[in-house]
Length: 175
Image 1: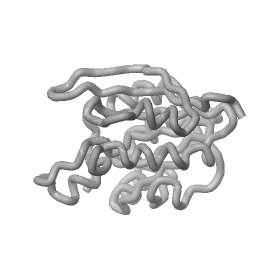
Image 2: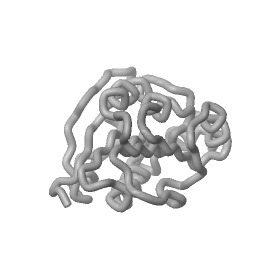
Image 3: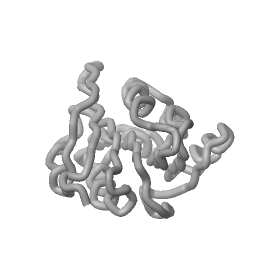
């Protein structure tokens, strides 16, 4: 199952188009349909997804894509890392294949926590991160700070039952 672009995808895509520049090394984590990788196509993009169906789909669009659970199969450092994670809290009734696309863990922030615990190893000195998440995702600001990052809200959008946010995240202290 491939995550079809929705409001969160389009909100993030607007920012990717502003931040991804020619000559940059860009990593699109959890590429899904490849919408963010395509938005950054002027850059040197590597896309990845845990789902082989997504990897095959994105490769057919001419994008370099690998199968990886977050950074498991990633080598090198990047100027921009894009992440549209599964960020919703677990709902028992949701089908398992759909959970893989939308659920970020029991509370909804576990995948983001894992991402931020590892991302420093793949970010260039002045690298930036673009993430999208929901008001239903708890403690995102705390997680970002916990791992030595600072953030700035770039965009938000109200949709039924929640607010979507796009953050620009950078190292708190430049290395």
